[in-house]
Length: 419
View 1 (cartoon, helix red, strand yellow):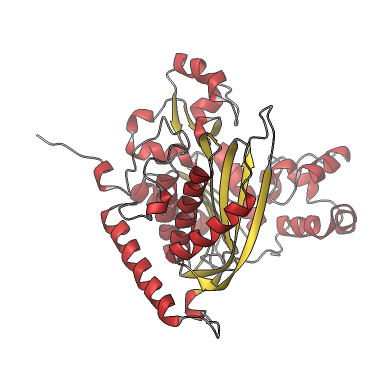
View 2: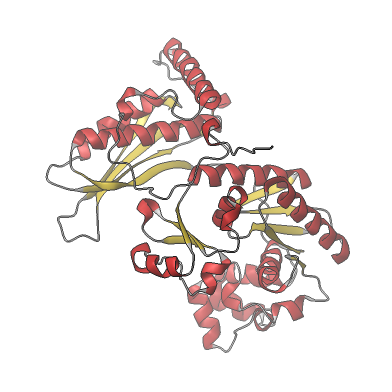
């Protein structure tokens, strides 16, 4: 039996855990630089606010309806996600983190009653321990679990649904085929052209017809919807192929010194994530870009370097990133974004040294990074940073409506006062 646990309106729910005044009110979470809505509460959706709505167009409308708009607090969302996923992993040895707010669980075969009982237990545990509401779908395949979850969100009061051989046809009749996991926009249009609009209609199609028109992926989806498992569980935590750190600037940047600050900031951030996962990178890419949507000269470019030996050292990564930045930079442009990507990731305990590498230097760097991370964990993020990251960082993205770092900064911990 497979379960898909999906947090409801995750970004908004994270904010509501620590700010009860947001409950029952229209809430939107804004994109980088407070541009447009990337997440909405049910109340905001009911008002007709679309995802991607620009704040400057909808701000007065939200104000009239007692709405709230908040900057994206990625540190909070990431930490709350970690807490949710750690709890989910206690219910099954097989746990696949599918996204920041979704995870698959696999258990032995269960009856519908037992599956629903377990789903309700998981949901109640997550709500009690984190305050995050979620919907849970169960089925004999991952695709059926995904479909059950979509149905539960809209049609089941307690947010839990299990699809079995006995109720599969009835439930899938109410799930549009365009919403099925694995069926993209093009295939949905193809099926609609042939009069197939519900998932129940799709599962009755001949396998040969689906294989011919929708290739192997379409056939796999059909088999999964009919109860034949074709998609395996991925390892938890999933193997990472790359780590990306990037943000748009709050204001355009034209000076190399400021671009260098941002690359050092993003490089250190990526290196910290690398160390937290006990990984090393063997190559890195730096990219820069101007704003595509402004009527001004446009330029974007990237460059990659292979390191002499795999590393997780912030000084080494930022040094190589700066060297690449100097080869990319051109005068006369207003840059909107820079970023760094670490790839060629390998486990740290499998590190292989070059014949010409200075092992003493590597060990010294490792100890330095360990001390730096320990201080930042104990006393708060950015307690110790590289001087090259800059102090003022005038290029930082706009986050005018940012909520506190409730779970990761001592000074932002919620206080409870008693008399």
